[in-house]
Length: 434
Image (cartoon, rainbow, N blue to C red):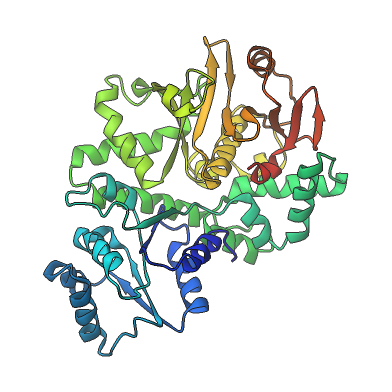
C-alpha cells in the first residue's frame, strides 16, 4: 500500500543522507514495511538488523559506539564486507539499545558515506527519558502516523474520487451528489476500520465490506499496545496508571465536557498522580493531545492552559473498537450521542497526520471551538466539527463575532460550500486542509 511517508524518505535521500534518519511512531503503523520498501527500491544493497530480536546485535553496541568498529563487527556478524557506498543499513526496534542511539552521533560525524535508518516502538518515550547524551542535531527525526483517510482512499482504489475531492476543496464547488454519497460511505467505513495498515489490508481483501472485516485485528493491536506498557515500563505502579488512562479515554470523550479530568479515572485522581503517565502515552504516539489555548494570539503554544486539554486515541478504528460500537450503527447513520466523539477523534487524527499541533478554544464554558489552526497566510482559523447535517452553532458564531477570522471551517456531512465566511467542508475532505 502506498504511504505518504515515502515522500519524507525520498526527501532524506535527496538531502544527501548525512544525518541518520530516525523514524518515530506507534507500533503496527507500518514503519518497518515502508522503510524496507524504500530501501529495496532505492539502493543497490540493503541490510536489515532487528536489535530487539537479536541479543548478539545489541551486544555489538555494548562493546563500542565507534562507527568504524561497529561496521567491522557487523561484517563479522553477517560474514561479508559491507559496501558503504552502495548499502543502506536499517536498524529496527532500536529502543532496546541506548548505546545504539548514542552511536548515531559518530555515524553522522564520520566522513564516510553511511546511510543509516532506524526505527522502533516507544522511541519518543526512550528519547524523553534518555540517560546518556542524546545526539541532538546529529539525527534527523520524522514521525509516522496511522494511514490517513487520503491514504485509505488510495488503498481502496479510489484515486479518482480522491482527486475530485481535492478539486472541489480548491474551488469550494459541491461534489456531484453520487460522488458525495460514495465518499461519505467510505468515510463511515474508515471510522470502523481506522488507519492501521493490517486492518486496511484485510478490509480491502474483503471487498470493502465492513461486515466481513476482521475486527480482531484491531483488538490484537490494542492488546499489543497494552503489552508494551507492561513490557517497557519498569515500575508496576506506573504501568497500571498508564493502562488506566489509555482505557479511560473513550469514556472521557463521552462527557459533555471533553476536557480530560483526572478524578474521572479514580476518586483520588490528581495531576501529580497521572501527569507522567499522560506524558508517556503522548510520547509513545498512542494518544494525541489537544491543548486549550487561552488567547487567540500567535504563537498559540505560549498561551496554552496546562491544566485544560483533551486526549484522543491515535487511531479512530481503535476508538471504535474500544467503545464496542457496532459497525451497523455507524454505516446506517443511526443517531447516538457518541458519534460526535468519534468524529472529533477522526479530525484530530487527520490534523496530526499533517504534523499540526492541536489546539482548541473555550469562552467561560459558554462556547467551545473544537480546533484552531494557525495559517501563515490566513492567521488563526477556527474549526468546528459536526458529526451530521445539523450545522447550527452558537459557539462558532460567538468566535467569529469576537475575533473576526479571515474565514472559519465547519466539517460536517454536508457538501462543499462557502457562505457567511464559513467554509463548509465534508468530513471526508479533512485531509485537504493544509
